[in-house]
Amino acid sequence: MHTTVTARVTLRHKEGLHARPSVKLTKTAKRFQSRIEFALSDEGPWIDAKSILKVMAARAPRDTILNIRADGPDAEQAADAIVQLIETDFAERDSGPDHSRRDNPGQDQ
Image (cartoon, rainbow, N blue to C red; front, side, top):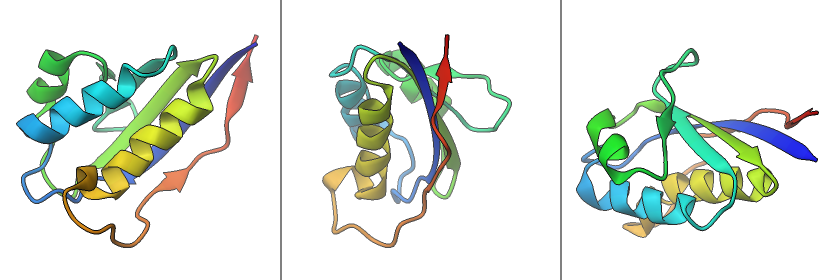
């Protein structure tokens, strides 16, 4: 079974997606088998969350809504882990209010 999960989360880190958060995002993504991507808009372009160079090149500023897409056998767990990492401000401060909206997971054949 091949599953695709999407989610949206607001980037609240004061510096945006700079070096340290980019490394944490990439390390988290690499823990999963699924392909994990994010985009700064609904239409993309989609960025490989497992590539530190691509993640850092995104230069997402604070208050950007990140669209998350995970595709594979552990897609739901992968998307949840990425959203949680971002919601907790990359574990650099206490977590604030929930700014994400999880979309319904779909299944591809």
